[in-house]
Amino acid sequence: MQALRAAGAPDIGIANSHGPTWPASTDPADQEAAGFYDLLLNRLFAEPVLLGAYPEGVGELMPGTWSPI
Image 1: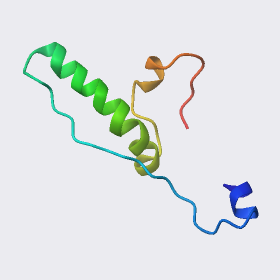
Image 2: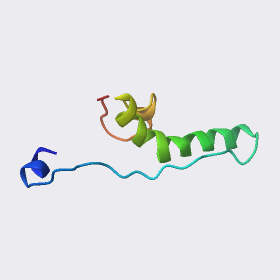
Image 3: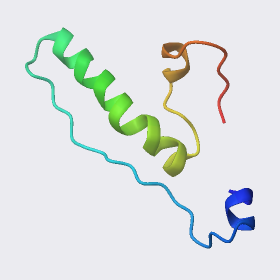
Image 4: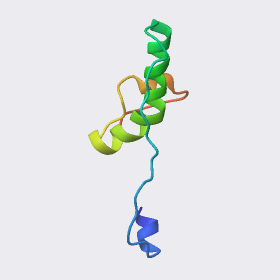
């Protein structure tokens, strides 16, 4: 952000595309898949901005070394 502002960009923001997520059925596998999709589509981007932290458990799903912000 500092480099963008130094280059004259007065307004800096993000553009996310969120959407509702529903399981296809009451089957536990569908419930789990919908929760994972919601995590990747919505919560992974919204929670750090709105809540100041990544969703709980997301670090274990990602490869490599992870630490919360």
